[in-house]
Structures are given as structure tokens and as C-alpha cells.
Length: 122
Image (cartoon, rainbow, N blue to C red; front, side, top):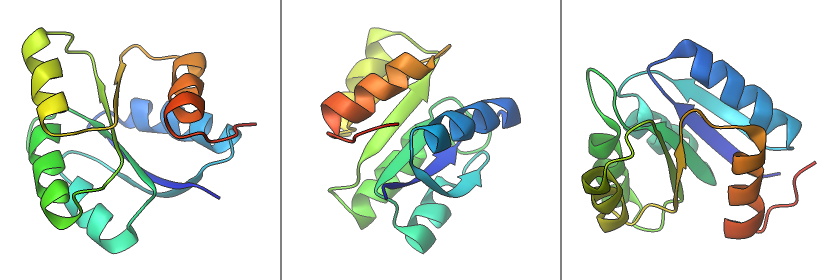
């Protein structure tokens, strides 16, 4: 089973995303809010981390940078409403695996998991 962690400052987003991922057969190891990505990654070492980018305390850029220092091969999917080319470029410079734009839907997530990670979803 593929394991993952979800980090977003919006509780509703984490709830919806965790429901979608569980329906697709992924194991949710932990859910964090605002800056918990690094600690949760160190504890659980998931197959994939899903993280929001714009959060008030510690943004996703901070989390991605720190996680990549721990594990340069970490599979990270950024989830953001920021469609600016600057954000997109910064994320690709950090060598993230994929970007999913909010508002997301189940088909977008399934496409990322099946095409990028070759995961057979339910």
C-alpha cells in the first residue's frame, strides 16, 4: 500500500483530500496543519507528501526545502491555488514531483497518481 501525509492549513482541504486518497487505496499516515510537514515527514517517511504552499506560519516552500535536505528523493506533490509562473518555477526548482491546483478534483489527483507514480487507484 502506498503511504502518504497531507499538510494544509485548511482543515476542510485535508479532510476532502484524505477521503479521496483513501478511496483510491492510499494509506494516510498523518495529517498536519501549517508547518508540520517536516516533523511528520521525519517521523513517518511516507511514499508521497501532499503539501499546501501558502500557509500562514511555515509555508510549503519551507517544508519542501527542509524535507529535500533530509531526503533529496522525497516525492512531493504541491497543492496550491497560486497559479503564478513564479510559484510554479520555484516549485520545479525545488524538484517537486507534481503540482495540483486548487480547486482540485478526484480526476486530477487520480491522473497524477496513475501517470506520475504508476499507482493503480481504485
